[in-house]
Length: 138
Image 1 (tube, rainbow, N blue to C red):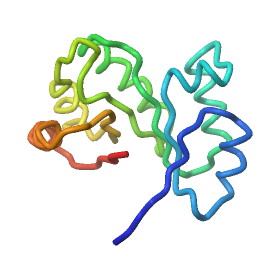
Image 2 (image 1 turned 45 degrees about the horizontal axis):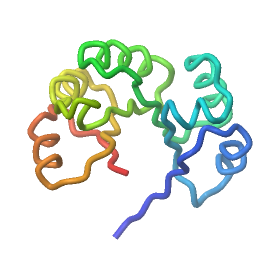
Image 3 (image 1 turned 180 degrees about the vertical axis):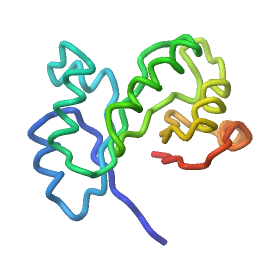
């Protein structure tokens, strides 16, 4: 069995420290972690993180709750770097499955990290939505 450890943080010092580690294979963040770390501008903060983490994969999460807005944000986030994964919650805050976003983005080759997957049924729905399986589950 192969296990990959990802550091869940938006703290510059933490990311800098673990970017040099052979144990940590990548990073994942979310808007709450970035806000707690002092981010005032999501994009600017993310771009600074990208300079620190080197070529290791890193996930940045969309912050919209609307599916169409999620898709637009995902394309923007995806453009920030080749090692960027776009983090999409499996359901929005109203409990609506984000399959439309997952389907469109995966069909366009956007690397995805589907997050907040808690049930087997959610896993099945995600896989049925995928066109291009390049996905990280955490």
